[in-house]
Image (cartoon, rainbow, N blue to C red; front, top):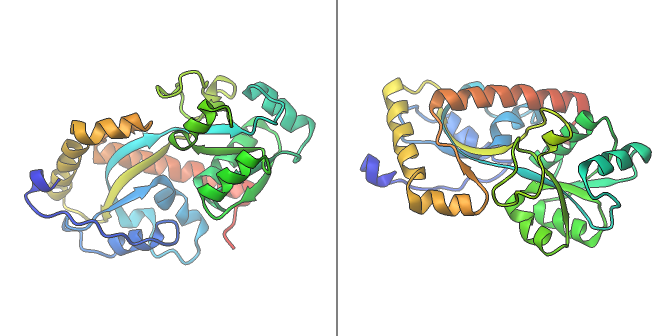
Length: 268
């Protein structure tokens, strides 16, 4: 982006509130193209439903480019007596609430993916939230919890080593990195919930500024030295238009709002 725009591009980390602090900072900035945020799906489409004191809403942001999408994978500890999705769903229905699933925290994408899976499968499993993906994965490997939704690149080495069993990916088609793991949609028709990362800017950005930013971002992410490492780690480079990204944001806002309401998810 520095090369194509001819200006310095500075990365400033503003962590906190599941990305909410940094995103609020951008939402309050001038829509002149000089301040943008790189955000995961949850920051834009989940946070507004969960945080009462959130300092922004989706309408306060301009979607610039959906950069990459990542499938999550449903993994189970090998002690679980289910070798495929149908067997897991049968087990969940026969013993409602007996199986536990880990997540990286209340309101996280892993939490909501599991709730969506529960509702779609019409089965019960108990949520055990952790403070981050690392502790959750450790307890899953130890057998203290039985299942978890996690980004495929993070758990693929454990699947390959036989320490976890991958039962289904959340994309409509198998991942090139693990083509042997079937889509959950092969058992639950229409099930799709990929995780994405994109760029947003303040609302009210002029069309020509938005077009220039999008063009620079698309060129940068499609450069082989950027796209190749991302794809090797299991990501799909999307490089969308602003209009395409806006449609994705609107659709995911509706989808996760419905899941949060029906599952009664709350942030204490």
